[in-house]
Length: 420
Image (cartoon, rainbow, N blue to C red; front, side, top):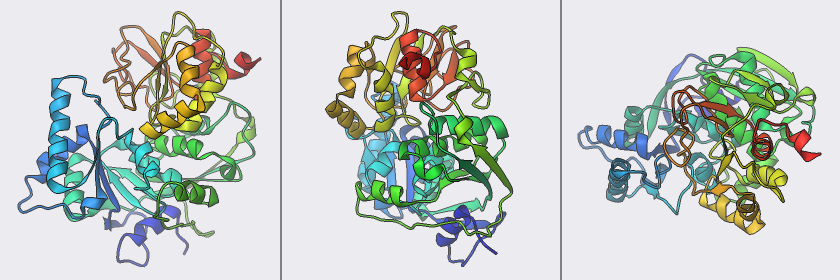
């Protein structure tokens, strides 16, 4: 009997030759991860464990990205607590100016590689599947145990196979594929399952597009979202560190709970309207709806390729006078690379605000909070009621091209129309 990509990775983290869906296992983690919000709670639980010590300081990482730079005294105290804990135990600690959004930062630094098991106290830890790593979100108590034991207790998930065939049209990327998929199966369609992304279209997807798709697997309830690491992945990894990782492939006779097939040649830019990531429509259906704010970047579309896409339309143009735009590079390196390429200049000359890497706007924390009745077009991953601010505000999820086109138009707009 063959095995899926998820099963092979998890089996490699146990003493078993193979594992099966529904089986409960203790799996060795390669990276235990937390931000300041989840980390401070994990620290409290860690300190309750009598005689606890960090299982391997090189494999425990804390990244300050949610309320940083500190927006108030409380957030400053939280970060201070994480900083002091990291110093005491010698674990990796990424602070303002040296960091970025955790899921962009760790692969960039070579900390996560194909075949790794990443247990992160953040729901979007599923992102690491874009390089063939099994990333999954855990609670802060589980994070404390992972830091102490180097293991995580979990149930081996069933796998769903998503087959994407054809070549993507212009203006369409991974964000559109995953929005279309979530619309098809629903926000609970992959609940506690592994989403495995395959098909003839996949080799042509950029790493940034794969990133967006794996990142939003949790929006369908998935335990993780996975791409098999390939030569494009190998090039990505070799440019960022010395660890090569393990390159697993699912078996031809692997068993999947469901198989979904899509022809990407027929797809167009999509938009997830309030208040669920599954409430997806073609952008053209909502074109002309006036907006107040646009956010470009953050984790889902905060890689350099995403900023290039937005800059392609914004170059030589100004954003609509009624609209404000916040650009959030995903890491310090992304910020610096964008600056060297002239992208930051394009954004500033278009009247956009460019901010330090942070999760702030995405969760309605700071640096882009919405007021009563405001509409925001965002390249982020969630549009729940009140997600980015006031309970009566609205968030529309899009790809970077649509975000840039809408910023110029002052209303939801198709990039195809803006390019003509």
